Length: 84
Image 1 (cartoon, rainbow, N blue to C red):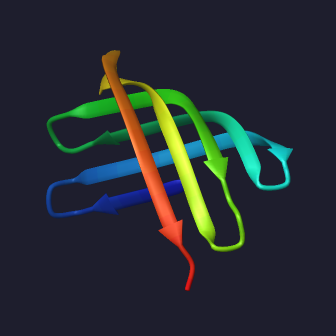
Image 2: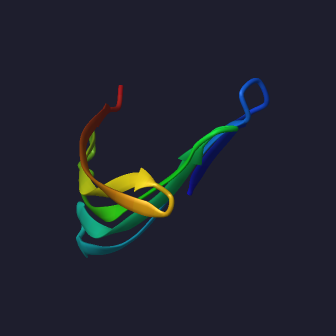
């Protein structure tokens, strides 16, 4: 679970993931998040897959996002983390 908040514009964000390790280096699962500020509240929900070898991590996620009452826009992300 990740979360952040700033006072300047009353901006916040959060993300939570729950998954299953299907192989020693591979996990899959569901994710959800909330984000917003003083004038907007949004939400997102979807699925992710993560590959975590010794050198780092690659994760792929996708689902729907948008206004908290009607999250209906698709999203996707690809993240790469390298350990050194």
